[in-house]
Amino acid sequence: MHSHRFRLFNVTLIACFLLLLSSINSFAAEPAGPNYNNYAGFWTQAVAEGNLSSIDDSLSKVRAWVEGQARFNNNTEKVGSSGQFASNGNTAGNMDWYQGMARTALGYAVTDRLTVWAGYTYLPTQNYGAPYSGEQDVWPAARYIFPTPFGSVMLREMVEFRYLTGVTNTPAIRPRTLIKLIHPFQFEPRLGFVLWNEAFFNVNTVTGIGGNQGYSGFNQNRAFAGFSWTFNESVRSEFGYMDQLILVSKPGNTTAFNNLNAVSASVFVGW
Image (tube, rainbow, N blue to C red; front, side, top):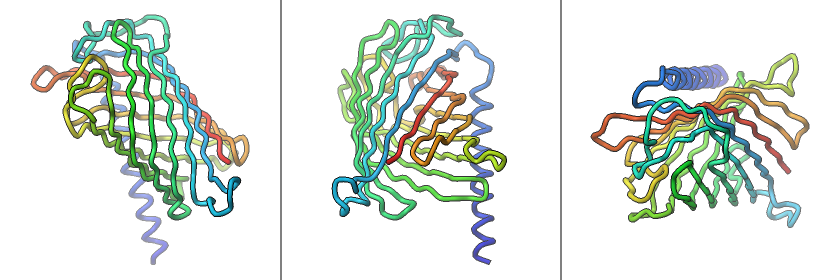
């Protein structure tokens, strides 16, 4: 009976996840309108994670997380002080670097499935025609990974305390919730199908110069669909399509979104 309930719970969870991802992608795929900026991009990511038992056996439950990203897009429209592009529509500029990310954290494995983290993120941003900004975040996070009949599911909750260039009331507080499914194929277990979705919400309103700072409430959503390849027990890669939908309008104004259609390539290294 317990096993049956567990399977039913997993099936329900995956069904809800797929429904959520489908609805978000359908919304993001709506035709571009006067308040909908659509552009293309390319995101790269490298993540290394492992325990510290090599230093001392007593540190086997202590984990380290190091991550770097480089982000490119073809957006050549000037960004105004509100964070919204000066003109709406589709862009077709060159694919240029606009943002990087360096993240590091220490964690503790509470169980084989649950890990808690405390970390730091540096996010340099240079949007076209906008001032440079160097966001710095500190954050706690919790991650839970469990198996299902469909593959491995990861749940992660992170709360960022964001220190933003030129902002007058810091920190900006932003929870972000990630759910991810990796489904290995039976005919080739090294190859898998990957789906994930991450939603961001601003707790407080922040004011300052340019950039993605925003107002309380919905901030952005990222949805990904692609494939993974496991080279060995320590190295895995993911490649696919990511949709990033960002709310850029001010409260009370006509709703406006920026939508990035990106190719995403990631490599994950464990030790």
